[in-house]
Figure 1 (cartoon, rainbow, N blue to C red):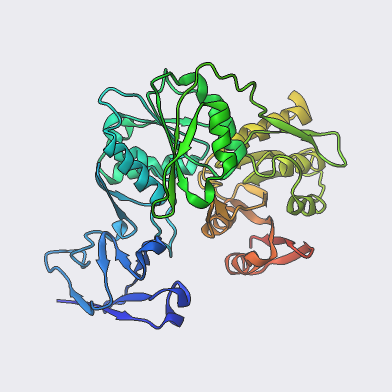
Figure 2: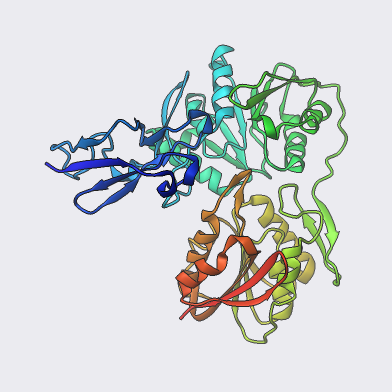
Amino acid sequence: MELLRVKELSPEDSPVGAGGAGWCAQLVIGLQFWLSYDGDPLHGQKWQEGSATVFPLLEERKFDERNSAGLPAAVPDARANHLKTLSVPQGQFALARYPRLKAVALRAWDAADEYLLQRLAEEQLPGATASVLVLNDGFGALCVALARHRPQLLSDSHLAQQGALQNFRNNDLDPAGLRLLNSLQEPDGKTDLLLVKIPKRLAFLEDQLYRIRPHLHARAQILGAGMVKDIHNSTLQLFERIIGPTSTSLAKKRARLVFCQFDGGNDPGKSPYPTEYRLENSSYRLCNHANVFSRESLDIGTRLFLDHIAASEAPRRIADLGCGNGVIGIVAAERNPAAELFFVDESFMAVDSARANFAAAFGAQRKARFQVGDGLADVEQDSFDLVLNNPPFHRERALDEGAPGRMFEQSEAALKGGGELWVVGNRHLNHHAKLKRLFGKCETVASNRKFVVLKAVKG
């Protein structure tokens, strides 16, 4: 019988630093597992392994001899280690973020999800035959909890959609019971219950409310949810102006609910989206849907990047990874007239903006490929000569330090031998170190006080 020994670490050794008590569980057979903080600062110094809570008095746990995999009885499968248990009136659900980060296991829901599900239970919503539409469910927590009502999930994020599907499978729910809609699609029929997770960009919320309004009716129940710091007067004013009378709940665990009543006589006018701006020092006018990064003007990091995109007459394959409105790929296409361009982003609005902007720039004379997906994860390996990347490091309001690393790994796999990955990013993000570990070396092409352009070559 093997033993799993759990020992307390000093704050300096903690995986979250001096702010929490770190734990390391070490198997004598040589495997190591970090027990991950449950992601909610209101829970204090509590750590979770799967759905089991681990407290400082615990010193060791024996293996279940019947477990042929040699894992602790509380964790029947190592692949399930990243799952956390959401306990709400609708039931208990095993949820995980998507994509899974190797070293971090944060919760796939927040206090606003819990508050909203509690309120629905108190109000006995939704009704048995109600049509349910959920906006911006980050990892599917709301849709999983309401799965028996066969909700529609409308999201601008490919990764959010895949996360929801994965969490349906994690809970032995049929993914066919969830209808996925992207941010440019219309929901089916009229909506009886509309649930809105408040997004980061106010413009995106405005666009969504304009799009959803025709699918509401006088008896529709409309509830929003978000953390207190993310719900402002401007948020409530949008609901009031576009949908109807709006109020808020008291705060609970730093979360707040928004209640709105549909006013059929209200005329909010025409949606202002998409918008466009003229790219400086060019004749290009760039179309931007409401959820596109830097939709009102060229951001300063991309401006530095554009100054250093090289020209070539070679018939190269170039990828604009995390393309946004496509401006990087469009400039690369202009300077590489024989190149084949590939635009990819996890945002539906971004890819649609890039497609429109490329068509406006080159018309039918130039072909390119456009894809909504998880970066270059699904492309053929050793197939690109150049990858251009301005990686995000936030997902909605949460810091996503894993996104750049995933993109760099995908790029290394997708590049041909001798192919190049060019990256622009904030200097403090330390992309240089990540690229050097992955490619062996990394060259600084240009920099200013805030941004740096880096180049890594595949050996």
